[in-house]
Image (tube, rainbow over all chains, first blue to last red; front, side, top):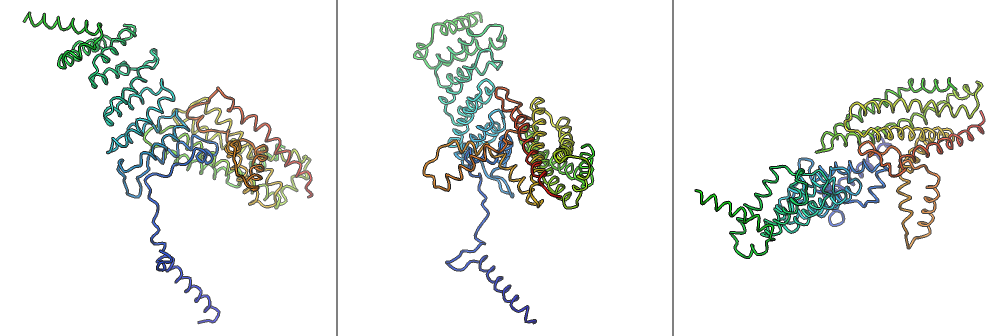
Length: 272
Length: 255
């Protein structure tokens, strides 16, 4: 071997040995790079609003879209799929909030939350975050976001099984301006929830208020028929099944409506 | 002046700049379409946002690199000496150089505008008009800075790096302002003077973070504020300022 190459061969041999120990580790002193695994975290850490703004380079929309896009695929990658129950919903909630603060006009995040993240296999633990976010997003522009209030109420009622929480949200829906062109069921939602809770008097009052508060031309015949049916048939039968206590709390108007129907039913029974 | 402008456009054709930038923009279109189509909802909004950000980056990087290398090469090849032998003032020379590069930039932006107006659905028309105008002004400011940097510096690589630094800081200056307005305690001397430097710099830098916002394409312009007018005023102040600085340096150069 040429004398001038010998030192180079020696140096490269030492470096190769060093590379081996760097990879493999040296006893207690160094664990080795082979033990350092890629960080396959389900969700990236939530940045502060300042950092998000700084790296948007003045274009908040692209920061919103890029991070929203990342959030859509968070937890999935390299053939790995994460069940929704395994996500940290506390962390997710902060992601939703921070992105919604950048752009609350977009439906991107709220859509993911209502139709994707709400499907957690552990609803009691995770869905409260969903309901809180849907409500907070809707509060930013209630008239435009009425649909998301209804989604929040739905999740509270059927996934959290918390009727009181659903009622809080349903009240916000019912209190939206009367001239807003939204379906009538959004105003009736509280009545159905009160019915579920067994508070028939309140359910009846809400339906009566809708009948009185709206111009009759604004309500279709089918809708009016349903509201009368709701009071005179559904509520009446529930009240009759539950006895005198429920009857006592009814308002005179509700009682009159129910008695009318009861009299008619008896007449029809007599004819038969 | 016309001859110099025509010469700049000719050099752009000779350098295959148009071809390069158009290819990059086509790649940006494919990329943003691909990303936008994989999102669950608001696909068009996603495409518009990504396209706006990527094409802006392609345009700015392309113009900076082209201007800096073109001007330095013209110095080294003695093309500038030759041009100055004609009856043209040095101030006029700087202006016509900037104008030539700007015409190239406007041609590229027109291609982007044609694509967005025909192929991206649900773009807000008013927002799009302001975005386009604002992107042109942003390109004009950057062109002026690139001409200035390549005149004052002898290395094209240094000019490119200076332009990138200027562009990034100008796009972050709004954020720096926001941070400076917060009160901090327990500052060391170094922290204190660093803040002061940023504070002084914020007075001198243009607010490029207020230019060509992608949200204008998606949600339109918020006319309750005057933020959408800032790009026009800022460009009207900053372009002549940079061209004047470049002209001062160029006038003092000995050939």
